[in-house]
Image 1: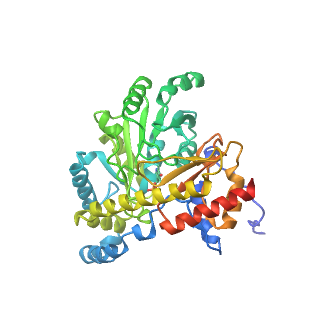
Image 2: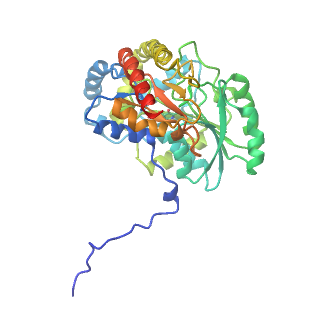
Image 3: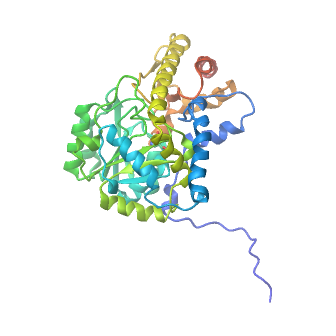
Length: 408
Ligand SMILES: Cc1ncc(COP(=O)(O)O)c(C=O)c1O
């Protein structure tokens, strides 16, 4: 009998859900930039600066983790997170005035896994999810992967235009199942949701019986004092508010360590869901972060980041003034923290067409349309100021202007 020839062409039959799975222009930029053989100044990925990664401390802490835990540092760990990290984090949150019950804490593989877990539990196919516009590409990609539909709400200097929300919802006809917000130094616009709007947003969530997904990677990276109280705190710790955080921006993104704060029954479900994903978060990374906190290094480190990123933001703004000040219709935001500036080009500009030219000139950014499910913001772009040093920031903005002139 002849064996079946398994080499013939085969067209995979994906799930219906797979059709909604989108990649991320932001994440893809990392591979794209790694492939470049010429000098490119990266304003694209929202990464800490290379000198902001505490590698020297890691060397010592890594040895300490190995010494204390041996092979266990590379074993499986509890899904809810390593005991050492959980207790270090709970103490550190309590010092910040945020008391969290242990059963409300879940350690995750970065903020992205937090977003995924929340959407997995709370977004069904066809559900309406409110989000800022522009917003974090990977957040809306996660919503789409669970077949949720995003309702885009414009953003101004005070964050999401919450007062416009009821009318937008009425026009859609569905009641939102979830509100996805990045309240502090929003990615990509850099804006912060004002206190009155936070209060109003919670009222609307109550009215609609919606879950609030508070995606908050940047809270600690403030330049002018802390942002307003978190939605979770303002809600009086209401079950409907789920906060997703990460150490990616304050310690190191490659460690892939973040956390969720939610009510215990939700955390329980998330633990079950995480067991079907990755079993546990990287144990070595968790123990490293725990040591970093326990030895009091995190606070001083974050303070350094605040100073450095504030200076870099100013450097980028003054470079924009110098190289784009003469272009009518160009403006940029003034974030009070975080990593990003939002640059608006003259109406009719096309930042997607600008991108390859800028890459040729040796500078990378993320085109504005990546931050809208409807493809808005073609005439805007996101600039990350945290990664290059100040000299490279100035040179990057100069190159951007050269590219801009080539496309106009
Ligand atoms: C708003 C927002 N949420 C979540 C994340 C994802 O964080 P992580 O890299 O820890 O998965 C990011 C990273 O850029 C972000 O900007």
